[in-house]
Length: 133
Picture 1 (cartoon, rainbow, N blue to C red):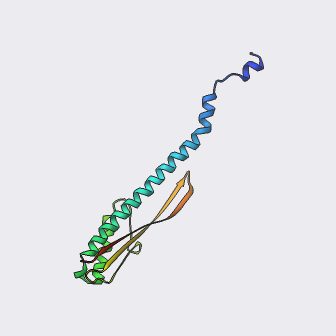
Picture 2 (cartoon, rainbow, N blue to C red):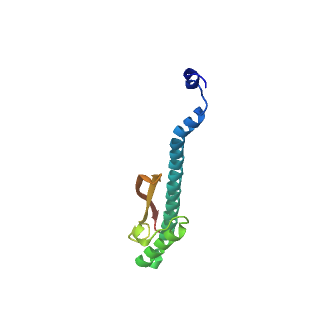
Picture 3 (cartoon, rainbow, N blue to C red):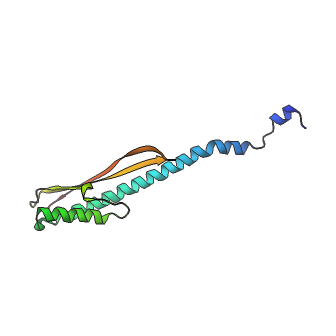
C-alpha cells in the first residue's frame, strides 16, 4: 500500500467529482432555457392569433356588433396552433363605426418551472389595434 502522502496526491476520480458538482447547474440552466423558449413560443403564437382576430374584426362591421365580436373571438381561437384559448381569454372593444378602432386583447397563462419548482408564472397578454373599415 502506498504511503498516505502518495494517496492524497492521487487525482483519479477528479473529473467525476467535478462533473457531479457542475452537472446539476448545467441541467438547471438547460431546462430554464427550454422553458423560456416554450413560453416565448406561446407568446408569439398568441400575438399572431390576436393580429388575425383584429384583421377579422376590422372587416366585420357589416355583421353587427354581436356577430362581429363572435367572429373575432372565433378567428383568434382558430389562429392558435399550440395553445388553447377560450372566449373568456379574448376581449374585443369597438364602437363598430367606420374609421374607429377595434382593440383585440388575449391573455394566456404561463409557468416556468425547473425541476418542478416554479420560477415564474403569470399571464402572457397581447393587444392589437386596427381601424374598422
